[in-house]
Every structure is written in C-alpha cells, then in structure tokens.
Image (cartoon, rainbow, N blue to C red; front, side):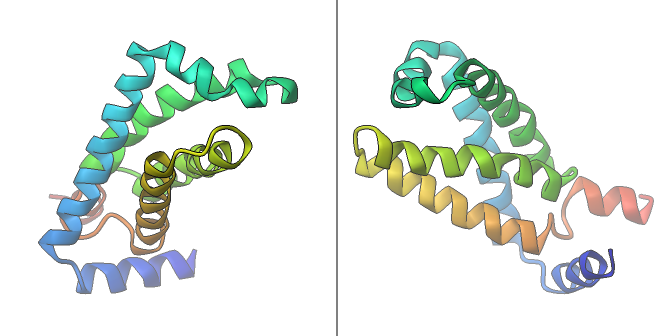
Length: 140
C-alpha cells in the first residue's frame, strides 16, 4: 500500500496533459475494440480457433468484450485505472500469444505490443492528476 501511495505522489507531481491524453486515448481504443468484438463476434471465434483444444474459449470470449468496454471507460475517465489496466493484461498477453499459436499478423502483434507497453506504464504511473481518482481523493 505504501508503494502505491509513493507512486501516486510521484505521478501527481509529474503529471502532464500529453500523458493524460494518452491515457484517455488508450481507454477509448479499448472501448472501441470492445464494441468491435461485440459487433463482429465471428472474428473473435476465428481468432480463438487455434485455442479450441485448450477449453474455456467461451469463457474467454465473454471476458474480452466486457473487460474492454468497462475497462476502456474507466481508463478514459481515470477511475480505478490500475485495476482496470490489470484486468486488461491477460487479454493483451493472449492477443500477443495468439499471433504465435495461430497465423502471424504483424499489424495485430505490433498493436498488442504497443498497447501492452502503454498499459504497463500506466499501471505504474497511475491515472494522474487529471482523473476521476484524483478528484474523488481530493474531495472536489
């Protein structure tokens, strides 16, 4: 708990609008991906075709879209940002893994890697000074 407090103090002292815009863009990107997965669920079934033998594919499919939708909104507003980002980690790791198990798609792999690195950055950085977390903590 002390580590999170020290990370929050550092992040609030070093907050910049471009980082807040990057956090909002990440949240909007994940939200749009969630809508994309819901509207084109057949693509998601095709994506998980190499993993059919491992079981639990329906569980994964029903986790990805809601986690992106709810997590994307929470990340964009900066509400429980670290928790929302931690919930995205298994999805992002799975997106990277699918490229090595199934058909390699360099574009999807690069997108997943970039989003993973941004996600890891914001897990440590937090939501920043211009977020719902900060406003709720400060009592505005």
